[in-house]
Image 1 (cartoon, rainbow, N blue to C red):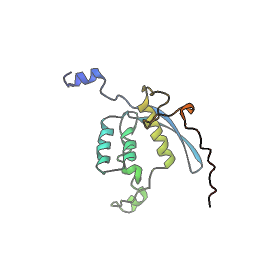
Image 2: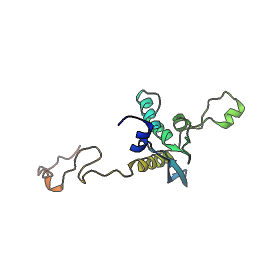
Image 3: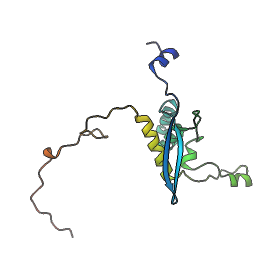
Image 4: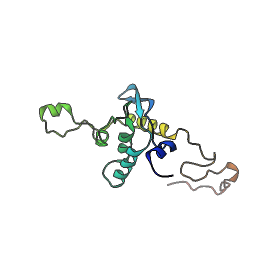
Amino acid sequence: MNLTLEALKSAGSFTGRPVEKKIKWRQNGTDFDATVFVRPLGFQTAVNDVLSFNGKHDTVAGKIAASICDERGFPVFSSPLDITHGPLDPVELEKDSNSTKRLGSLDGALSVALLLAIQEVNDLGKTQSSPNSTKSGTSSSSPASAAKPSRKPRKPSA
């Protein structure tokens, strides 16, 4: 295949539209529900991975920033810094237009909910490997192949 836009379109090489997902999380004793849009992994994620590898920003925050978008595909977060340190504090900006104070990092439970939505979108259609394999690539053993327990009694701990 010659690498052309038409050939790439025919091969399905573009990630397509964002996928709508419902998320839930608990924050300070309150339950929240939200609709988020997740961009399937693509160019933005590849850029994030390179920047993370070079130590330019946090890998997980970059993955969230690259993947979470609005229904038209525009990023919700302007950078991973919005996730790790929060957006600029509007109260402080009103006092001092040069302020760099931020609101603090994104809530942990919300971060996990977003990461789960990203994982769900990007695992769609993938087949699972054999039932005895694990995500690390090591295989699980069946009870029949496990070693017999030692008959030697354990020494009491001091």
